[in-house]
Every structure is written in structure tokens, then in C-alpha cells.
Image 1 (cartoon, helix red, strand yellow):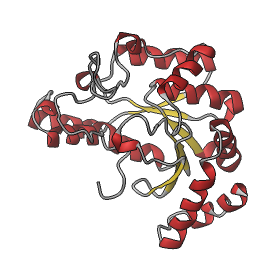
Image 2: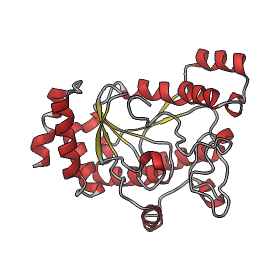
Image 3: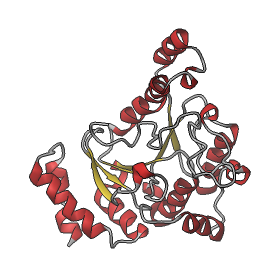
Image 4: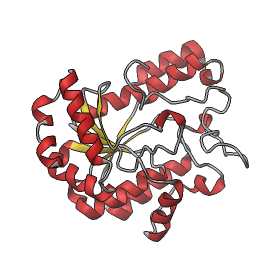
Length: 257
């Protein structure tokens, strides 16, 4: 049933009219009953090498890489965004994953001239001075490279989970990413809990970022991430100097945000 409906997506790519979006919402309801491996298998069959995992190499992403490689390592495509401000532990993990699964990880960097101009005008630590500056930095170092990376694909996979933050508690397992060329966006772990993520990691002996063992449940750029204190929300370590509970870097904003 799902397969027959989804087959229409390629012909409708680029459309955002009410009928098309209604069709996607109906598919989303059906996808909610599907397991993560089922969704990944469907995506491989449907998109082949036109599907990619956008990975920051957090706990969720290494789970997805393990599953994807077990289902079809030859078709597994992974890219990451190197902002130039990542932790060394993140770079170490990328190499561990590459070697363990024998896969290529494509790396996208921000436009150097944009970074140079931003830093010259606003300084190296502009993100601490205002929310606007922080969003500018995120846009140049992350959002623009993501858009560039996704242009060649018809479908992308993320490690988003509803439990992570209030900005993600209504995500569906299948969506249309209007801000990125109307491609299909899959969130196969949307209904997973944090405990389920770590049970899978330990059971399957998957390498993970060492910072997780030092109190970092969520890891981004080094200047913008700290360990979480006892009793704090799991996302409290991201942009901790900001008070807004709806904090995102811009990679997963909906249209109009």
C-alpha cells in the first residue's frame, strides 16, 4: 500500500500544492506503523544512491549508519558538515566509523570567503554576543553547506527524535523538506527513546563520540556545546547562554521559521 502511493513522489517532485501535501500527510500516517529498518529498506529500494544520511555523528546517527550498512552497505551514502569548529573527539569518531564500516564520508565545508568576511566584521566569538550573530554563524557554517549537499539527492535521512526537544516533538517519519528543494525527508528514529538508542549502540558495539561519556548528550560545535549538569534538560548544553527553549541551528526549521 505504502509503496504504491510513494511511487508518485518522483513525478510530483517540486510540488507543494494542497493535494500533494495532503497525500504526503496520508503517507506519513501509514509510515508511523513502520519500523526503522522497514523505512530504510523502502528508501534504498525507492531512491538507491539518490538517498543520503546527513550525519553529525551523534548517537542517533551512528545507529542509522549501522542499520544502513547492515541493510545495504554499497548504497549507504553519508555526508557531514565540518564547520571548522568541531571537537577533536568528533573527528576521531568519523575516522572510526569510516574504518569500521568501510564507507566513504563526504565532508562539506562552509564557503571560506563568507567565513572570512563574518569573522573580520564580527570576531571569532560573535555567537556569544547576540542570537542574531549566532544564527548568522550557524547559517554560514551549517545551513548553506547543507543546502549545497542536498541538491544532488531526492531523499535525506536524519537522526531526529521527538523526545529530543520541543522543536522536534511533532516530526513525522516521512516529510517533505520545502526549504531544501522539496525533497523527501525521513526521520526513521522519530519515535525512539534515548534508552533505546543507547541499548542499540551497546548491543551492536558501535563506536560513539567519547564526549557522551563526559556529560555531553548533544554535541555540536565546540564553542557552542558544553556538558549538561545534573537535573538539566538534555539539550541544555547547546547554546547554553541563550534563554529560548526553541533553540535550533536552522538545519531543521520548518518553512517560515
